[in-house]
Structure formats: C-alpha cells, structure tokens
Length: 455
Image (tube, rainbow, N blue to C red; front, side, top):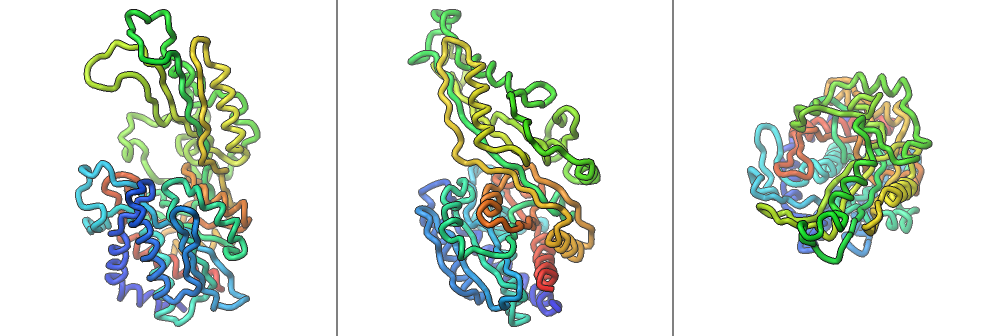
C-alpha cells in the first residue's frame, strides 16, 4: 500500500536532508535567555513547514516562556486511530565550542553521520515524522491515521511549563495513543523497543560551619570542616556494593521478573567500558550492570562544590560545601517520598558543629512502563524489523523523560517510544551526530508503522 510513499522518500531524501539542515541551523538553546529569539525562530520554522505539509489548526500554545507548536490532521475519519506525536525543538548549549570539529549550527555530513547540535536530540527525530507525513500526503493523497503534533521548546530545561499545557488543553490533545521519538537504539543497526523509563528526583544540600573561610592552622581542630562533613554524609548513602543505604529507599519497588531478566540478558548492545572509557563496570549486588542501569533504582552524586579550587594550595577550612544528588526511580517509587527519605537521612547523619540547608529539586517524574506484548508495541517491533532487516530487542532505559509520565498521568493512553538514535550520537556533548542510515531506515519504519496501525 505504501510503496509510492517509500519511493517518494527515496527520490526526495536529499531535499528532506536540506530542510533538516535548515532546521538545525537555528540555535534554539532554551537554557540561555540570550537565545530566546532563536528558540522562537525554531517554533516559527516548524509552524511554517507543518502548514506547508497540509496540517490544519497549526498554532502555538503559549506557556509563559517558549511555546508549544500544535497541529492536527483529522481527515482520516472518525473510525481511524488518532496518534499524538511528541517531540521538542529546543537544544542543549554547545560548550565547550573548541571541542567541536565543525560548526554545531552548520550541519555537516561526515562518514555517514550528520553532525550538528540537535541532529539526534531531538530535531532530527522530530523531523523524520514530519517528512514521512509530507511524503505520504504527496504520494498517497491522504494519511491513513489521524495525527496531532505537540512539539515543545523547553524539554532541555525540564519542561517546567509543559504539564500545565497538557492540563489546560486536555480536550485538544486527546488521542488513542502517543509516540515519542527522543530515545536511542541499544546499538547501531539494532532496532530496539523501549518499554520502560526510569523516574527522576533529587536535591541539593549545603553544609555550613562558619560565616567565612578560616585559616586551617589557627582553627583546624576547633571548627568542623564542611567538606569533610559533606563527604561523610555522602559516604553513608551508598555502600561499596552499589546498594543504597537510605532507609526505605527500596520499599515497595517492583522486582525484576525472571522474564525481564531473561530479556535483558539476551541484549547484545553497548559495551560500557568501550563507550565510556571506564576502568570497569560496577553494579548493585546481585544484579548485572545492564539490569542495574535499565531496571533498578540508582543514587548518584552529580556535583560537589566547596573550598579552594585554584592552582596550588590555599590552607583554609571552607565556610561551606554543597552537593547535588539525583536518583533514577523504578515502578513503586514516588519522587516526593524519595526526596523526603533523602532529607531525613541527611539530617540524621549530620554531626554537631554544622548547619545543613536542603533544596529539593523542582523537576521530578515517576517511572513509566508499558507491557512489551502490547499490540502497539508488537506493531512497532514488526515495522522496525521490516525496515532494518533485523528482529527487535526489548529493553527498559535508565534515562528519564518526565513528559512521558505526565502524558500517562493526564491522559492514561499508551505511549510508544520509537527512537532511532545510537549510543555514539554524543547527546549533550560536542560533535553530536545522527547516522544517515537511521534517518532513512527510521522514516521507512514509520511508514510501515502507520500502515500497520491503520489496518
């Protein structure tokens, strides 16, 4: 049925790549207010292109900051399924710029990869959907499904204004299911179905002992050192077997089933030592590294600050020291409850002679999981296999996408994670890239998927 569409995509792939390059040239860095005009420019680009494709009701939903681009195609009829496509058009900063091998906003193809900020996360993957819809309409004259597009501009800064948009426009955004393409395959060329994401929560705490830095000779032994105190508190939160020792941390979590452990064991994906340069892999006692990253909760120290950081020695007792902590969560864990447990643990392990202040993180999300045998998942796996010539593997991801949990909470419809990135894409780092093979085969996958869903 869709052979004309596949042929059209093949014949016009260079033109689609050119349009994507134009999209990537817009430095829509949401975290820096100096780029607010460019973020708006990216939203305008999307609005214009989506209108040209042939979608209706194309508009920007205001958020108080960067807008959400919305559009719909409802001409497939009331009996056809309706899908909501979510993505984001904002990107991460490019620092350190000197580590890029080419201009991050002048997309360049090298060795079969498209190099640019946003090429994988998430402009490239968002554009694949738009190109496929354009090709179907050009080749077939009509989409086989109803479509709603919801593309935001604040994902890279925590989507702080997005959940209120979902609630305010609940009727507008109703659908039978959602598709998110903001994830990666387990390895290049291996189609991968993600059926679960971890939740996220965290906090920052500061230890203070004096009003100013003190001479370590005159006051050492009389005033408690905040950096040493900070290190002590952190050391009580996890042991050498990677087991979190915060009371209640594991209470009520969903244990890994034998079936899921078998699925994870079958994965032949990323070699962590090769891709990270790590000396060795470590994991929670009783679990493999892949089981730990994909399906067990974690606690990590993301940063520590305090004392003298310059060259040479400065003999002081710092007045304060602080640490940032985040936890990745699994089904059965509530973000707010975990924050409270962390706060209680820190206070209980704080010695006398210091004051502790705690700031709970504002961005939190519960984990998300859909059963891997769900019909929409099976159709996605079948479509991947047709395009890539290889059977899908099924996995849960250690990362978090808070908006997925919000969609689940507000709408309770299935969310299918159709990602086409690879571990080599260097997301959020210099030299971000996206493999052209995945760009082309990913679009082919989507053509097959919309046909299967419509049938």
